[in-house]
View 1 (cartoon, rainbow, N blue to C red):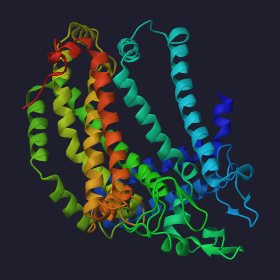
View 2: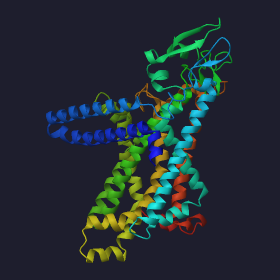
View 3: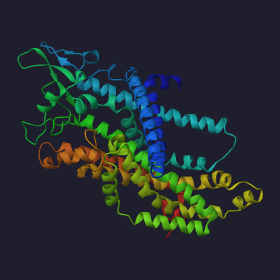
View 4: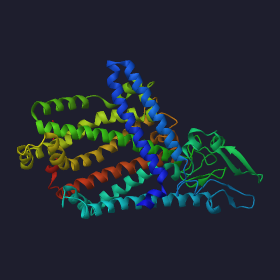
Length: 477
């Protein structure tokens, strides 16, 4: 355990700082929106506090990013140049950039899979030797899922894309800062072997300009290719010359963050309201149903356009380059569907004898919901949440594809923008620009649906034969 954490301590610490920053931003955003109507002056104080704390956390994250890790690009570099005698200089062990990159990529993926396996084995040890209860419903779900190959495929896909989000800067042959955001900065200088046999220096921006993929044989850097500046491009380059693999890793990070925040927020709201409406029923259930119907009736695209225009010049619209605002909107429009999906199981468990017995013993409603209702509906919530997140990912990519102020703001990478940039070259030799991002979106959405199928079948194995459809049925409307 200590070794796994120590190998990538700076990375894990940076992720923790990023999660704390997101939590601070989310809480402060809710407080500011509430105070903005009652006391604009106090709301401004809260906003200034948020800016100060976020700035401090970003500084800490930047400091952590400077610490080398065992699998970082500084330890296993892939950027270098050829010498006149044909040898490579600056790369790991003098290997070709493609080989050095492949070694680093493979080690990071292996590290992620080993870490995930260690977490699972640790949970098994805790369950068998340290947990107070001998059995919980989760045990049966895990046991059934261990034999579900389609669900395991979804888990592997999720781990791979989470690894891209967490270790994208090390997985890519270049960094987002060097290749996309700050192509004429000091860190963007690269060395290469010129045609006259001398080693020269150029900015990444100039190299990008001369490495564009524009649909012809003469102007195309395809899959697994080098450009004229000795830079290796696993997925080729884009029409503006940027490395597509680096762009995709940056897009994976923002996609996983935004979709994760959105589905988590929607799931928390749906879970809370489903238990409250099922436990108290009556007018409360009717009120939640009315609100859910009202939210569903709002066109999502229209809401996105309105909210983007309203908050475009505010600090809320600048967080994650518009991603935080999109996460809030997706959470707001998704929770009614999740609530409807788990309302039936919540109503069912609220009528069980053990819930009534807990009431007769004088347990508080909050404790009854947490101990006796939540474990029952959590599995169903995971099923529908994992299936709903695919729609969020597709919608997020579609907004970036449309552009015009929608989606993630440039220069932050977004998968939809890559598809849009390459749509004119689909029938040419530069087909990779649109096809690769499209395939990644399909793979991620398919993996999330597979995970949802696996969890559903693990909760009720009879659903595989069509005999348990009623177990997940339920409600509303």
